[in-house]
Structure formats: C-alpha cells, structure tokens
Length: 413
Image (cartoon, rainbow, N blue to C red; front, side, top):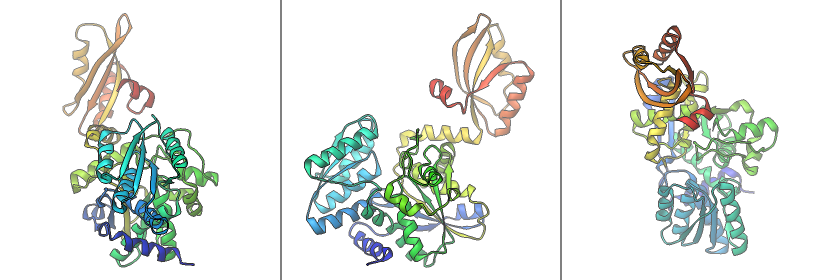
C-alpha cells in the first residue's frame, strides 16, 4: 500500500496546476523577539487566501478521475466554500454551496467570483448546523457528492501538502511546528505526514480559547461537543473535532494543545499588520499567537502555519478594541456618579495626563442622589489604569470594572 507521505507528494504535484508553493519565510521580527529561528508558512497567499483550496482540489480531482465531472455540495460560511468554488471552476464541475443567511456579503461575493458560473450559492439557516443539515439533505436528494471541510481522508491528504512543501523549502526538519486547529483536517494531515517524514519534530497545536474542541476530546478520550463556542475566530471555532482527524490526533497529550485567548489573538493580528504588513484572519494568527506559551524556544527552528488571510477590514475597529483591552490600555467602568453640581468635574480631575475618555453614557438614575454612567477609558500604559482606580477609591467614587464581564459587556458595550 502506498504510504501517506508518497500520496501527499502526488497530491502536491497535482496542485501545481493551480498555484506554486506558498512561501516559507523567515520572520526577522519574531526571530529577534524569541531568540529563535521563526519561519512562517504563508497559506494566506494561496489563490483563495487559505489552505482550504488544497483539500478541496485533492478530493475533487480524485472523484473526477474515477467518476468524471460530478455535482459537489458543501456547507461553509468561509474558506472551505471558497476552496470548493475555485476547484469547481477549475474542473468545470457543478457546485452548490450552502451558506448561513447571516454570512457577510463580502464572503458570499468572493465565493461567487471564485466559482464563476460553476457554482450556485444557497443561503439558508440562521445557524451553521441548520445550513449543514440542509446541504446534506440536498446532496442525498440530488445524488450529489458532499465534501466535508475536515472529516474526509482526501481532504486531510490535500491539507497535508502544506507540510510536504515546507519540508522541501526548509531543506531539513524543523525543531518545532505550531499548527492551528479547527475541525482537525490540517492538523491531522500534518501530524501524520511529520510522523513519517520528520518524526523528530515536536508538534504543538493552537486552538481559540473559546473553542478548544481538540483539547476537550483528548481529555475525554473521544470527540465531545462543546456546550458553547466563541465564534470570533470563525475559521477555527468548531464545537466538535472531526472523527477522522481525531483518530490521528488522539495520540497527543492535552498539554500539547495551547489555547489562544481571543483578545490576545487580536493583538497578534495588529502586530503582524502594523510591523510586518501581513494581513491575517483570526484563525490565521493562531500559531503565531501561542509562541508566548511555548516556553524557552531560544535557538530552535520553529515553523508556524499561517492558515489564512481572509480578513474583513470592517472588523478592524473590533480587533483594535479587543487588543487594547487585552493589553490593559482600555477598560470600561460603570461609575456611580453623585447627582450634584461639580460631580463630573471632580471625576475628570482624577484622570491622568495620558487617560482619555472614549465612551460616556448615562445609563439611569439608580437612586435619587446617584446616577449610573458607562465610561470607557483609554490610556498609554496599563499601570495608568491601576493608578486611576486607586484615585477613585481614595475619593470614594463607586465603580465596577465590566471590561471582562462578558454578559454586561455584551449588553452595554
């Protein structure tokens, strides 16, 4: 039987009909920061700006080779949809792509462009589970071929071509590889390939803190469904790791999976944008973000997989806001303000020279003599916030910091 590495090599050769290998770039900024040799595998530079095209193309080419042109169906609100659309156009195959009604127009338009006249987009369901069920039922009724984003051996094989390319480009095995995890297609493919081609390379996996489905599965010994998922990292926020990927990933320990806080990911995205001019979507920044959590990596050769760059710049204000909150440079308070002349002036006099009010909104009078005010403060250094709180305490102002109170922040901010 052909081994996995050999089949991945054949898949990688076939991919050259679509695009050249994505760059593997040594990053001087990160290398200097960590005292290591940090390389970035730039999957944000494929024709669809993510690695998902690899698996879609590989699965489709095998089906077309054996059955002829078929009718392909998928459910996706993002990168998988774009990869399927691009591959359908390449093979001249019919594609039907189901997307939630809530999908941003930008993603719908990009998918339509990549597919040309080969794909039809169906908007259905407010939630992805509804969209997925509709797509699978449609595929059954039409006798079409449903392509999962990660629970398919040919999809996994295609994603593993990332590893074949980077080993050829690097010319040697890295000491450590950091891989982002969503449903597990990329991570399981790379884990299997590296076990054959570079067994001495350590692997670490990065999941969004609000969607640690791999870690939960490793702790339970089987895939489990998370009760809630934070969808901010939309390219990797998956409630349940894929069954096929878990078969490969089950050999790893839970402490080899690192959780990346969503607000810190925002800081990483801004850092890469402002310092390096690299545009990454939240999932694309996962591997870089956990470099802080790897311990001492000085002197090591480390490869981070930058999985995608489909970032909607309309989200930039939110990303900046969350990055500031993580850095301690922006906080929100509900202030209990006395209802008397001069009370506001008394508060303003407590602000430091670098403190700035970014939000001020009366909420209600909580009592005859006091009112509640929502106030947002920005500053230049996190220690300024501690000093402000000390001054508020000394002057007897009542306040509540709601910056990290998820329920109140969603209601008020």
